Image (cartoon, rainbow, N blue to C red; front, side, top):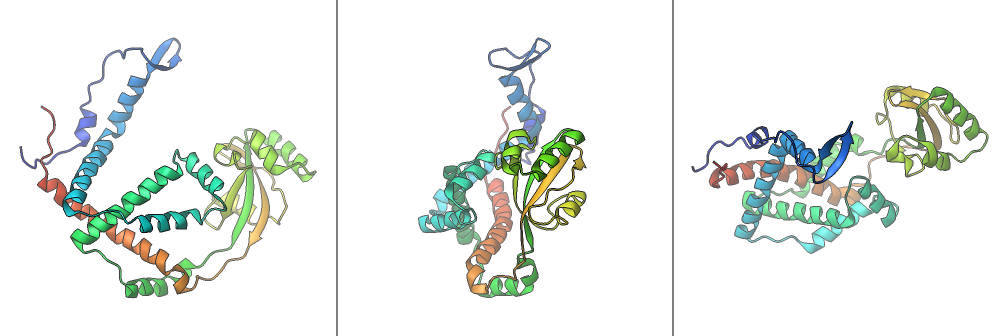
Length: 287
């Protein structure tokens, strides 16, 4: 059947679940009842399989379109974009650590950037997508305030389960204990624990209001009182307060702005283009 209105999510809903999974690769047991890798994968597919299948369909359609149109990723553009991303981190080790937190690597980042560049070139050629210097200038002038750098705080943080425990640690920290070492040892917040509790630059609106009120009232070097949350009790240390900065000069961020605007326009055009590719393709569900 040519071009049926396919609801790919139905693949997930229609997945057949065996009454008892074969116990060949047990992930965990609960009161003696095993949960296998096959069961976990089956549940994952039933919950988000439609999205996965849709993504795979689009991958195939995109690859065919790339070959048909004859576009290739510009290696210089890929390298330049990777360099801009890397420049946002103090060194390569920090970049690798941040990527690892989300299960990524520099190699997978480079591959994603290459794919983004390839898609941009494909859509630009097929849909005539482009961003002019005038459009970039207009965006810059209209968004100067948003492009300004707000005041930021360099903050460390640790999370423990009990209030008394938090108070004891606060006393130790005020007496000279090393916050980074303590956070690395006892904090329940796994995301910041590996960095000695470092939250990175924090600006207004990034923290829950009750925490923000406490953090922004601290002086450099000061340790907060325990702050309660559903996850436990938090201690904060203000390492440094940095004043805000006006928007960078247009010439300094023109390339970045143009890339961001192009990415937005490309994403919009891609959704339209991929719908056309789907309509022209023969996509069938197995009988």
